[in-house]
Image (cartoon, rainbow, N blue to C red; front, top):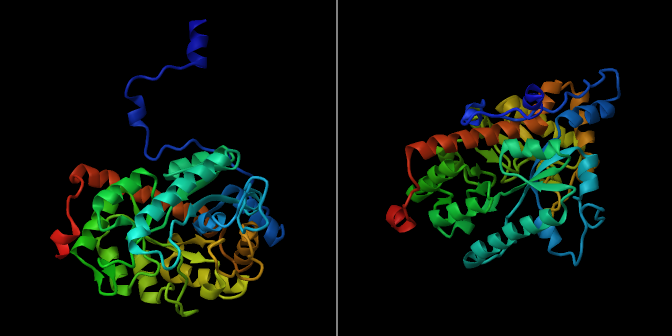
Length: 372
C-alpha cells in the first residue's frame, strides 16, 4: 500500500524544484502535423492550432471606454476584438496597449496609465472563461494549455514614468511589460540622454521590454547598443516598401536582427498597404533583412486604424498565414512568426533581468542628477 501511495502522490525533496531546467514549461500533447496536400487555409488553421498568434499590439482598452456595456465572451460587433473571434483567429496572447489618447497632458500621463492598468485587471477578471493575465513566457503557455487567451500589459508611453525610476518600478509591479521609448526629453530626436540610458538599464533589471516604434533613429541605435535584453518594435513595417515614420529602413532592420530584437509588422493599411498581399510583402521583406527569428505580428485592432482587405478583425489571421504558406514560407518560420519569437524575446528579457539583479541594486538616479 505504501508503494501505491508513493506512486499516486510522490513526494518532492526540499530544493528539488530549484533544480528544474530553465525554462520549465509543462508540454502539451503534440498536435497532428499539417497535411501538405490540404488547402493553404486548412494548413494555416492546423499550423495555428499548434503555434497560435501572439499579437503585439491591441487597442481594446481605449475602445472599451466608449462602450456603455460589453461582454467579450459573448462577442461584440462594435469591436474588432472579442473572445469568439480571437479563438477563430487562433490568437493565444495579446499585448494590450496602454498608450494615451492624443493630446493627453503630460501631468495626466501617469494617472491615465494607472487607470488603464486597473482596467486591464477589471476586464480580465470579468471574462475568466476567455482571458487570463500573464506576464512571462511560461504564463502565456500555461494560459494556452488551460484554454485561455493570455493578456499582457503594454506598451505604455514613456511619459507615464514622470521622469522617475521609482515610478518605473511601481508600474512594473503592477504588471507593465513593455514601454515605448519616445516622446520625452530623455528619449527624443537626438537620442538617449544620460538619464535615458539609466532608464534602459533599469528596464533591463526589471524585465520591462523596450518598444522602439516611433523612436528616432538615434534613439533606436543607442538603445540597441545599451540594452542587455532584446527589444521590439511593436508597430513597424518595412520603410523600403512603404514610407511611414514608424516603419524601419533596412539598415535598422538589419541592426535589430543582429541584436536579436523583434519587428512586429502591423496589420494597418496606412503602414503596410490595403491588402493581405501587401502585409505579406512586408513580412517577406523583414524576414529577409532582419531574419526569421526577428519578425512577428501586430494586429493593431481596435487602435483606430484601417485594416487591409481580408484582415478586418482578429478572426482573420489564418488568411494571412495561408498567404505566407502559398508563398513558400517553411512551417518552422511561420511558427516563429506567430508564437516562437515572442516567447524567445520574453524569455530573453527575463534572463537578462535575473542576471542584472545579481549585479546591481535598483538605480537611484534622477533626471536632474543625470541631465541637469
